[in-house]
Image 1 (cartoon, rainbow, N blue to C red):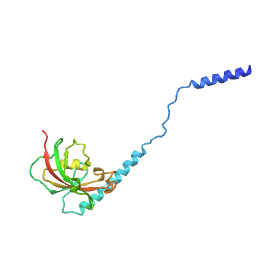
Image 2: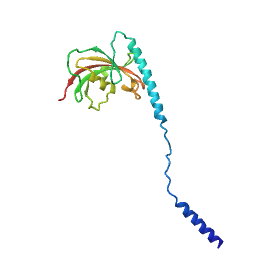
Image 3: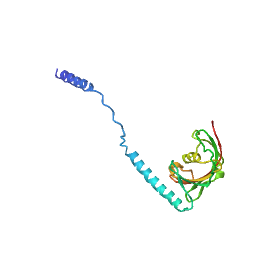
Image 4: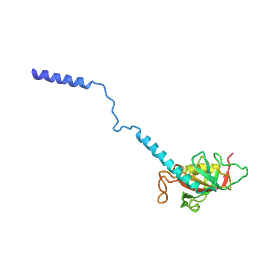
Length: 183
């Protein structure tokens, strides 16, 4: 009798314990957002360092009139067209040549290696760095412009295999050959 009482009591306790409401499971890994904050700090420091380096390059050439773009890079004209001709706009097809050099002038990719490029402005998935996509929109046919790009406008974290490291600012000389305007 005593055994049955104990058995019934245990069954009742298990039944009561199993009736509690389900608890939400906690994530295995909790994110505090500190990674994003640290990444932003690193990127700001990197940008300041690269901007300082680009400013040193520009200061070394006081005879050259550098302009700042709204997109976060600097440039100067090697050949400038003073005629009132249109610049590329959304959907226009442009052809151009370019090279990639380190800020010290060391050639990374020559104009011969990159070849003649055809690009549909703001509509192409062509693998151009964002700096070049923005740069051609500032040019007229026949102009040759040298651009100084911080790494985030160039090859950024990825670099170029066996040619350019990660987070390296570059310069690029671009010659705009033609603009085929869309209606």
